[in-house]
Length: 255
Image 1 (tube, rainbow, N blue to C red):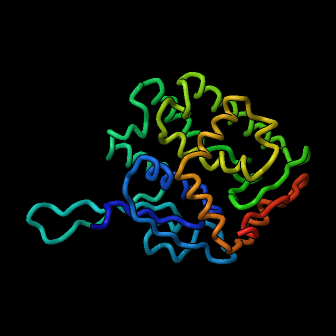
Image 2: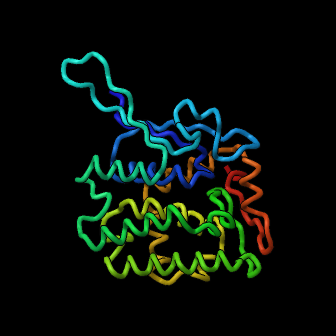
Image 3: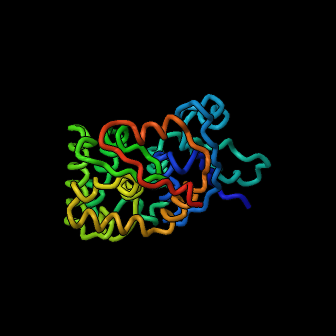
């Protein structure tokens, strides 16, 4: 029997937005069927051909197939959610037993705020440390623009606060949840761009990197991303352009 959730995503090497709901559902054992749609060459993350399943032509997009009403031969149309934040909020409503957000009110309020901050902010990290799980790029002093330094310092401040206030090992306490899923792509960026973590993360924050990198779902995602041999030119350029960047390793060439 097909699971009720169908998650549409794109290349695991590049798509930070796809990782968020995928990892949350994996780590919290919410069964789903994965539909991976590779990026077309010479295009961005908005793909017109994806309108077939996504009203805004981008991913992630979740289709929820609810069971048919009693005595009805027809299944209702799927419920469609097309933003990572909306998907996570929907899952939190559907599965209160999974504690996607903490039951403790202060921790829950903090986690929701941090999720919203990640969803709307950190533009310099997105642009200057683009998601690319297969590469290792050494960042020199010149690579750290004013905006990037501001974002990295805020990441450290936020992570250190959550880990200190709520006791870890996850950002809002003892259980993996929405806030960890939203910051997991940043964790992977610290692995791709060498030097950023050593310069800007405190001891607790660096320990958090190890916790997230050790998750089974994260290891599975990264391994799949490295196996994706195709190189999307725009994202490869984004990862390497700018001063103070030296490519030291490409894991795709070692497979």
